[in-house]
Amino acid sequence: MDGRQEDSASFDYHIQGMLTHSQPHRQTLYWNMPQRFRGDKVTAYGGTMAFEIQYSGTGPVNDEPLVVLKGNGITLVHRKKDQYGHFQPDRPVPITIETYEQSYERENGSPAGREDLLMVLADLDTFLIRATHVPNQVSTRFV
Image 1 (cartoon, one colour):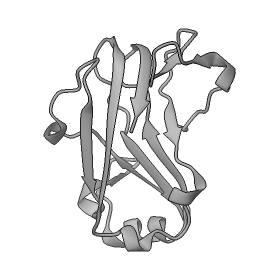
Image 2: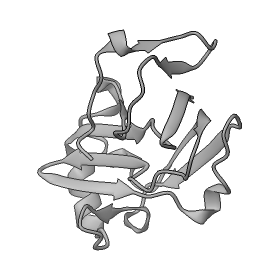
Image 3: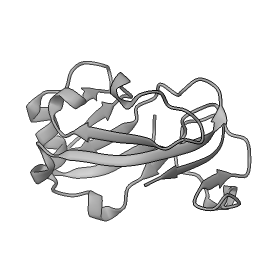
């Protein structure tokens, strides 16, 4: 889970509204949120993050973190929970995450504390949302 970025030349847009991968890949890829979503985000504590994902492809759903937040030397992750229903190809999946420590854990799986989340939000330098959801994925979108 290193938030690996791909050269944009390996993507194309042959399905309208979807980012498609022109070469087969096995690694988990992440959307890297732009600068406006980083920096001092302490005021986001207690709020909600909502977005929608959709993908096309086959195979079991990836168990890598759905969201990765890094800041002040701390990495917190949010993993897919049952409340999102079943991830199914070619169907929008709405995601809502409350911005409380209970929604996150440290990389090693230990629970995140309030101080951990506030420290990350005080200087959020990396904000990633998983883009690869199944092993044989051919397209993805994030709204």
